[in-house]
Length: 322
Image 1: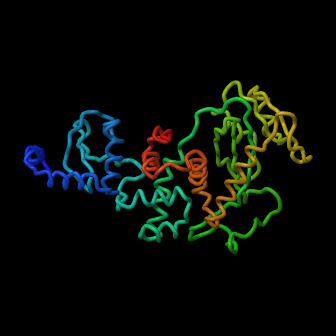
Image 2 (image 1 turned 45 degrees about the horizontal axis):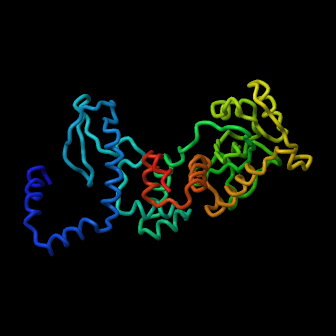
């Protein structure tokens, strides 16, 4: 509707009867998922209101497309909408987004989610990773105080790949080499006593000092006290960076040493791996998305799908809503 027609509509509202006004209020208050989604998307853009191509603030409205306001930038001349250059750009069926995010909230599989909301399984898979791409980016900046760090390992997976550089495994199978090897992916978890958690896909095989440095050095506060097992990679890292360090020798069945233990981080490992079982293996290239998904579930298990949509758009401040 153009501005002239809208002004005319506003003038005619005053002429409505009581019955007609109640009808109009009913229409406006009707639960319409597509309108709710568009409102959230447009609100996200209104908060920033800049060209996604050149960051200019000099724009003007340029029609509508797929329910979204389009804009043209006076600086670079390009057109765009509120989803341009976001992970959700060009996704269709907005009326189903909130229902799909509810499937994510309860951790349903790709096929279960597809059946519940009436889309193809390929659409369900594509939506999962588009929505999770920003949700998984919600992270604390720093870890403080006593911080537990430990790694866990998952067998490398090429699930979904048409061409493999190795013999396929039957139903996942096992590594061909005993112990830790390049067939296994290292997931490093750091968790402080305030339950703030950071996770990293560190690489293949046993953890090394360089991997520990690359992942932990930017996120540890100066006053941190690192608690780890007796792996020499952690000892070398803490010595080089002059970080306070305490070890718990798990290989000698030492679980607790005074106030120092790894029970929080190891419990997180267990919850993550048990949760991951329902997906019957995940491709290694998507592992960071699943780590972020699990992290979001730990922090916000009861948040409604509208809050998850805001997170998928990068509005993490909405996750503080209770």
